[in-house]
Image (spheres, rainbow, N blue to C red):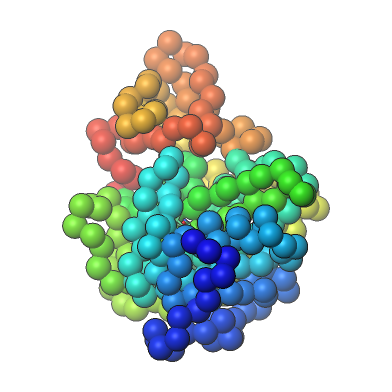
Length: 275
Ligand code: BTN
């Protein structure tokens, strides 16, 4: 990817102006760059952060990603038009990526709920599920310099087809059986992210944790904790701590702390999410 990548001409009607028409947020998403195709919106913003001053709430949207990235080094399949692929910058003052990642999950669930007829829930740390399948994922990348920054990378399967091997995934349009507007969804997402970020600044992480717990599909479920695809241990997901780590109670009654950067979880029986 190159910082010099520019919107491709003749690749559909979308422009940054069109994407921002529905925006109601004050600062989140206001500085938007739109690309018909990009390797990764996260990578693009991280490169930009290295090279220049990037305003709070700066955002990128791409119609497709050729090297979309997921958590734990996975690929995020990002075909043209079907998805919403966006990244947004915040400056949390210190590295709060665990909490920011939960915050983004809550904001995204609320945006999906507001723009569809669906009732999304969260699989720790921040996979958004509808009907027991994943419709969206979040990759937060953070760094210390020149001022602690975080890039919230958000991918939503909005419409189109799902690749055959991704049988745990679903699009919003499939789940609700009618079309969903990516522009409305993105605008709503920016509003919810802005509200939550300001709430965090004024009231700390408590409200984010409470909202996440309310939407959780993981707490009190039996889970396998996986590292590099292998089961490390199993237990009951009991709570999250102030940094967004999952607390899993093992059969011996021990509470083990699981951090999102290192591992994933799977519900008992290999289920991706409760149906
Ligand atoms: C996951 O569930 O593994 C996280 C997926 C995050 C995908 C989004 S799409 C926009 C942004 N750019 C990327 O390369 N990844 C994130």
